Amino acid sequence: MTAYIAIPGERVVEGRARSPGTVRGELVFTTAYTGYEESLTDPSYARQLLTFSYPLIGNYGVREERFESDSVQPEGVLARELTDDVATWLREAGVPAVDHLDTREFVTEIRDEGAMACGIAAGPDATPEDALAELDACVHMSAHTDIGATVSVEEPVVHNSGGEGVRVALVDCGAKGSIVDSLVERDAVVHQLPYDVDVEAVASVDPDLLFISNGPGDPKNFEGAADLVEAYTGELPLAGICLGQQVIAGALGGRTEKMEFGHRGVNQPVRDVRTDRVVMTTQNHGYTVVDPGDVLTVTQRNVNDGTPEGLDSEADSIITRQYHPEANPGPHDSLTFFDEVLAMAGEQ
Image (spheres, one colour):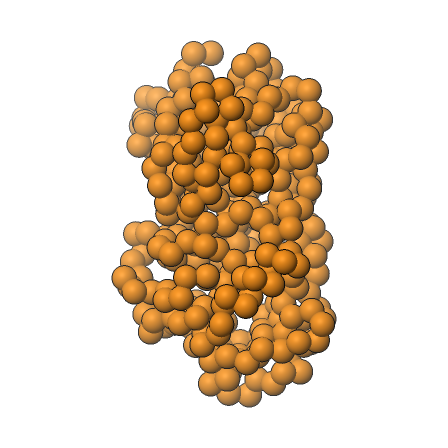
């Protein structure tokens, strides 16, 4: 089967269709060469088309225990070559996939021009015009104002209800399953709440810690989570990962903006400005904090571009990280984040 990929400038690239369908979204890439199962089930890839820069995807099969959510999250998948296992998985999930592509060309263009709109048409009846029509219908990530509803739980879920540790109100803006696992492993009782939960619903679980999760898209579209941050700052310890850092900073007077092509991979170096120690991290985000405001202090920065990777406020008991300290997939250098956060909450 043939597939067509349309990108700005009315350009169409031909490839092999491994899973049929027509789809559109923001074209991004990841540099990770392992962890494709985790990447493909990460809710932060919602409304995006994921390009793998590593040439062979699927060489150790597909195992459900590695999934970060209960479904494939990108709208479509591009690769140099997909194994039959991964192609079958994507086909069963109804997610269009294309391989036999020179992904180096896509990665280079995204790095030069930034993440871009893209349309895919794949299958026996696909035409270049179909792909171009998808491209024309593509909208900017910030226009997906309802994106939280597509990745969050609809009703509260309690994990480790019999635990005796810190009670965590986890606002699910697209939380990876390994974040919940990391908290439960430390005996926390985790109340996973919908992204648009209100102050009263959070108060009803009597939490020791308010935790804003990762998620897709523009942090400005998560107004409910920002309202919670405003309401609980100074009243309850706060933590955030990825989008959570951006939401917390924005709610406390900071400023965020879209990056050119974002950070996506398992090899991002981060330096702690207090100790000069560098750790390698897993990341997946297209927005970043550019001004933390007056409440938060930058404690960690990306070695490559200097963007804030850690924000803290000792006075208000806030700790956030732009990267994914749960490290699925990726290095385990930053797992102590969860110990720090739970210790902070336990001291209150």
